[in-house]
Amino acid sequence: MPADPDKSRDGPITSITPEERRSGFFGTIRRVFRWSVWTAIFAVVLGCLFILYPVDRRIFRAALTQPLVIFTKSGDTLGMVSCICNPTLRHAEIPETVANALIATEDRRFRFHFGVDPFSFGKALFSAGDRGGSTLEMQLAKNTLNGSEPSLFRKFSELFFATRISLAYSKDDILRLYLSRVNFGRLNGVPIYGLRDAAWAWFDKAPENLSLAEGAILVAMINAPSLYNPLRNPEGVAERARLVVARMKTEDLLAQDTVVDVAAAMPAKVRRLPARDRFLEDQVMRELQDLASSLPDGRHYALTTIDPIAQDQARRIVGRDMARFKSRGVARAALLTLDDKGRILAMFGGPDYRRSNWNLAIQARRQPASTAKIATYLAALQDGWTAESKLWDDPARIRSDFKPRNVDGTYKGEIPLQQCLRESRNVCTTWLAEQVGIDTVAGMARWLGIADDQTPNAATVLGAGETTVPAVAAAYLAISNGGLRYRPHLLRAVLGQNGKVLYRESDEGEQVISQAIASRMKALLGEVTSPGGTGEAAEFTGGFAYGKTGTSQENRDAWFVGFTGQGIATAVWVGPAEGKLMNNVAGGQLPAEIFSDFNVNLVERFQGYVGRLPQGEDSFWRDVNVP
Image (cartoon, rainbow, N blue to C red; front, side, top):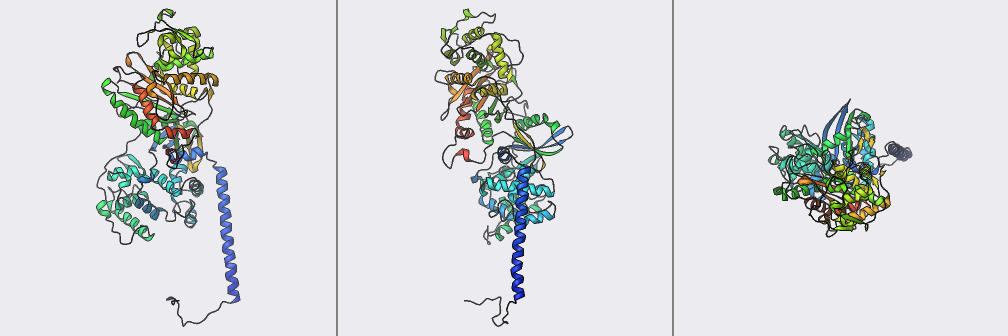
């Protein structure tokens, strides 16, 4: 064997004395004992934290994957800090060089620990939580779950959440979550969260196209975004970026001979600021205002029910489909999607917040038109009428002073109840309401939540009163839910310092109709979307649609409201500019088409909401963007 260069072959031969041997033996015992004690303490602390913070699985996942609003409360005043609203980065959007730069700089043992790095955690404990010791999992917990107030206890709560994150997600997914929610500071007052927005803001390119130097610059900013700002402190950013590259080489994550020209890549101006979802932000703050008196002062996290993928689809599809009907006077639209507990999964509040911040999906009151007919048919089913019962589609049979007419100008005499609804015929619906009782129908409408205390009359049977998109969506959701009605809501939970749950949504629904009646009504709504029905344009490949069209007088409002076979309810409304009219736009046209286009892209995803997970590793549902 070759000689050991660090030892002299001619040196004196030494021996270990019995005392030294005993000392070495007992020293090993002492070290093992100390590690055992620390392990036991760690286990006890972790166990106590699991007891102190039994965070619901949905709340835990929502904090990491769904849009959340960071806000402050001081006295009676609420202030929004920022909204982390984007979908989680895909694997393909993260260059390997950026991942390696992040690991080398922020958490070099990332691939080998379980969310907590024992070698550096002690340093944080001795500094009372002020410095060091944070793994990427702990930083992710600080950014989304337990706040940033410096304290020893905060470090322990980070330890707890970091362990949960490590157990729940793979290392590659943790990188995605971290880089989707990390703070890159503010530009012109706009908060920049996540690698995607930072790449577009500083380099005007998608994150997957970042060069090594550009990635190093962005990773350099993470440590202190306000300090390491390329416009205010280019020299400091360049020095920090070179340190990032040096650490990559030290950790063998970059070849030693790689030349990186940081100075040449340094951005000289802001390129593209991210668009804020102001309708979403405003609605979160409105719901928080109702809770303000029960919340303590401080900085908190409002977790939303929004599915970021569905939200992105809603914006894209409503905008695209509206453009096709612009020449026919369509200027505004709203979309609201609810899961089976009334949680808002997607919300399109209007086409342009700068022109109008009035949320059409939440605040606007419009005539529901024929979508309100479900009150008449539900009341009739409760009274013993069936799908085959005969109705009179004859104006001469109407007793009230209000004389409705059918849109197509034809009247078919005696027809089955299901045909009257499928073709959305006004005369036979009004005749049915008179047989059941106008007061009974009005009572059903109030019970469903789609009408207030308006004076009941024959006109309100056809939706001449006013209501809101959430009210109509919730009524149709009740039919899908077997008669259980839930209040539509956007707020899932509020977390305070150290991850304390200050508020969580209620899962209690109200039984407004029997399950048997709901099932019969669902079958009737399935007829509406079948061939020949007014809502057949709402059908989509891979799923089933149930719902109702609605068009108000003079084309002021056009609706499609319904639900899918997965129990996801969606209400779509379109209308003209204020004071204008649309030109021949009915609920069975654009609104039904939007419903179809929106749902066909999310079939697989919505299947997961009801537990019918599609097969295959590449399933869209298996992505981390799951509420």
